[in-house]
Every structure is written in C-alpha cells, then in structure tokens.
Image 1 (cartoon, helix red, strand yellow):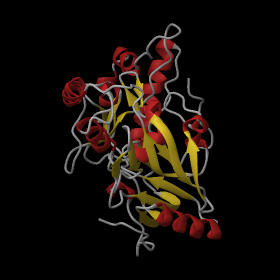
Image 2 (tube, rainbow, N blue to C red):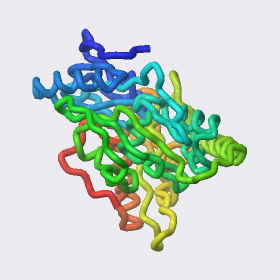
Image 3 (cartoon, helix red, strand yellow):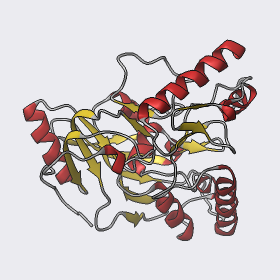
Length: 317
C-alpha cells in the first residue's frame, strides 16, 4: 500500500484503469498520495507550475473522456490507519477510505446508528462521497459530517466545520471550490445506537443492492451506478421522485448507443459493454434526456461527473 507522496508516473495513466466505467484516456501527470502532507506537496507543485488538475478516489462517479483529461490527476489512497473510532462514538476516516468499509466499521463497533446503514454498498471513497453528498433511501452522507480537513490548491491545509460545506442534494461547496478533502470526522445524530437493528438494516440494504444493481469488477461491463439525479419532491417535505421511473416510462431499457446500454434491472443505470466509449455513454445519456424532456417536460441532470467538465452545465433541480 502506498502511504506517502509519489513522483509523477513515468507515462500518463489511462483513466480507464481507475474508473468503474472502465473508460477514459490518459492524463498528463498521475500522482498518488495517502496523507495530508503528501497531498499538500503535490498541490504546491502543480500550483507553482499552473497545472490544471482533478482528484480521484474510487472512480465510481466519473465519466472520463476518451481523449483523456489535460493536466494532473491526484489519486487519493487510504493511509496506514484509515479509520479510527472517536471517543463517545463516531469515526475519523481518511478520504481515500472506501465508503462501504467505513459504514461496516462504524456499525460493527456500535459507533454509528441505523441510518448510517442506509449508505451500505455505495461504491467509491469517502472523499468523493463527501464532496458529492452521496446518499440513498433518503439518507445523505452530509447528515453525518462533523468537520472535514481539506488542502487548498496552494497546499494550505484547513479544517472546515459541516456548516461551511453548504450541503444540498448531491452537492456541496467542495464541488465548486478547488480543495481536496483528506480526512473527515463523522458522528451519528442519534444519542443511542441500536447495534442489532443497524446490522439488520445493513443486510437488508446490501440485499436490495445485489438485486437491483450490477456487479462491479474486472471483465464485467462498467458502470457508475445511478447516472441521473432524482427529481425534487412532488410536495414540500416529501421524498425525491426517482429519475428511473421517468426513464422506464420512455422505454430507456431498450435503448443503446454503440457499446453503451441501460441496465435491465434499473433504468437509471448506464452500462459500458464491450467496445463502449465514453462518447457512447454521453450519446446515450443525451438520448435519454431528450426522451424524458419530450414526454414530461423535465430535463434530467447528471449525477455522474464528466471529465473534463463542459463549459456550462444546467443547474441542478
């Protein structure tokens, strides 16, 4: 396991090797870091050279262009002690820690409550999940954040409280600022943890994901999970409306573009089959958006992040 600063790779790394879609061309520089000090050193170097950059964790919410991305990519890895139990409950985790690993640890130790179990099975690392306020079943990761440690583009480390992160549905201030999350402090809102109930809920969630979501791994079609954001609630205070329902209604599961197609068990999951390109996925996403807009007058917004980002993106609902 890499635990400190790494020099630039001898040759650009193919992003396809580091994203769950299995798509994407090279970057100009590939570096890995597993500590705040290592991240700071990389960012200072790039800042001094005016090199544009992206940060990558588990690569589970990224669609990288076939031609690659300009500049550097910083790959965050967990350090030697990626998860620590906090006094009185809660967790201190490295941003490179897998989210599901943190969920399992928190429940096993009785440090987090039943709502924490609803985040079970979400792929990717905590850093990306913190930035995007990942969630499921009405629960969002931001609900558990107490504070985060970040590194500014010039290499300055800072600690920000949850209130400074401006959390919203699948958004945070971190997405709009150039800063890298390196550690996160997590707390359970509940004062008392029911460990058996939390463990039972995790088993239930994992079973649901096994039933409705495709498996990830070498030799399997690539995916980033849910592709579009769900829609705002129909009534104030209600649950968000699933984008998958609208996609089902327009026949999404029968659509494909090149090697890209829609998962048979979930209309909001796009798959990259053999020979697929990132352009195929983008074309399929555009076709799905057009079909939903034509029938329902609603524009679906990507939850997956395109690299590089387009010049202008539609606002999230």
